Length: 156
Length: 103
Image (cartoon, each protein chain N blue to C red):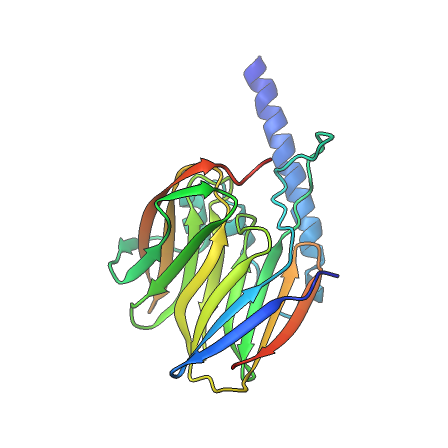
């Protein structure tokens, strides 16, 4: 019985969150940026869902995609990350944190001479694999590394 | 309105290293305040970087980017004096655009 109640509560929260996001999306016409925020991918709650959301079906590990992260992050609220792709024709890079509530952290499309490199700072809720995905010529490549988190950066 | 961004673009060879610091709370929607109420999500969703009048980076961001996000990019073929324009839009529709120049 408790399980049923839990399930109902869970789905109620989920739909509440969705309603909020739709409302947020309604503000979208004010924005002038070309590409749409990929809601399906950013809202996914697990790694397979997020990868599906960005359209990365088949991925291959690549040594030419370099992911620089600390081995141990003392503060999960600020984890510096560097992603460098030396794969020819890399057009996009995604950064995902496997055990975060929504794994997809950020996506970047490069054009007009921008090198396929990005540095950012991530929040990590707990020790987790961090994955970088690069897209080049329609193919998806990945690199990953585990980061141990001593103090989580999600929640409060 | 959010505070201005800090934009720095340094030319090394023919590659400009662009670094941007955005002032934003980046609330995940999971944190609770002192009274135990959930703080609603408030985070940057989209950003663009233009160098010398051309869009070089189109980025999308989720809740798991740190508060006051810092991003670094490298742009080949930039020249000293090229204008660097960075814009972002958050999930509430707030936006901000700031300019810098390649040095």
